[in-house]
Image (cartoon, rainbow, N blue to C red; front, top):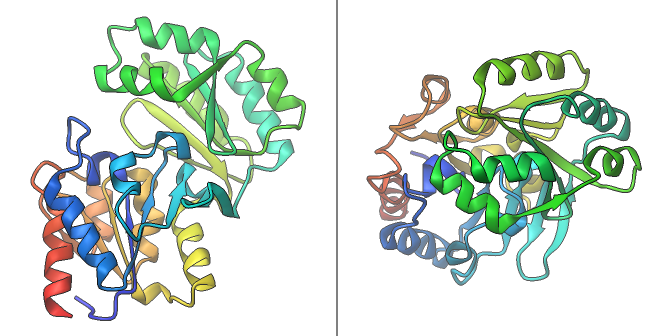
Amino acid sequence: MREDIRLIALDLDGTVFTTDKRITDRTLAAVKAALDAGIVVMTASGRQLAGLPKSLLAVPGMRYAMTSNGGAVVDIRTGEAVYKDLLPYEQACQVARVLAGADAMAEYYHEGKSYADRAGFEKTLRSDLMPAWFKDYVKISRIPVDDFTERVLSGQCHIEKFLISFEDMEERERVRKALLAIPHLTIASGNDFNIEVNSETGTKGHTLTAFAAALGISPGQIMAFGDSENDLTMLRAAGHAVAMANAIPEAKAVADEVTLSNDEDGVALVIERLLAEL
């Protein structure tokens, strides 16, 4: 492992979070120790600002959070976005028209909040097929709206990301194919029932390296942790990439090492080792 790591980027779901969506005391202690050592530690999540865990953001020294798969980087102290990579209006409209006919819960992320089509929102909360943790998370973090498509077409929304969650995997594949036909987009997934849509450069990898450069930090000085498809660009970009034991095969293939799983404090283990080598 390189000893000049100056920035640690942490995916959340499947990485920092345990399966039951907790952050262990050991992981929080490791993050605090890294911050105390002068290393920048930031989230690198597909979640919107309102969906980030308060326990992690409250660790003294935590200042930045990458949200929306790279759609924004937020200064936690002020709540202001210090970096944005939004979907262009033309592509956003094309996405909205595809989603208008989808049997799914469609959302767009705008200025740190998530706005969900009301019909899909209510169906998700009633669903017996969606995981309980996801329904609980949706209930407290989404704002349902009746005019989802019209809001996007109005051009008044600064869209960081679209998220679409499905009960029917055949419908998911149909929508994915339709979205892939729209040029200049990034299509990825954070779990096995969603699709995430960002701008062409609105990826974790591009945003991470661009923001790090603004801090005077090179890609070789970045350590990144991840487990899923939407982490691949970040793992490829980082000087030291760490995949979780529970990660998809593609993530393990591009990583420099594979740590223990998200339920075994895999993140803490690597950070502790890094600090011991400094």
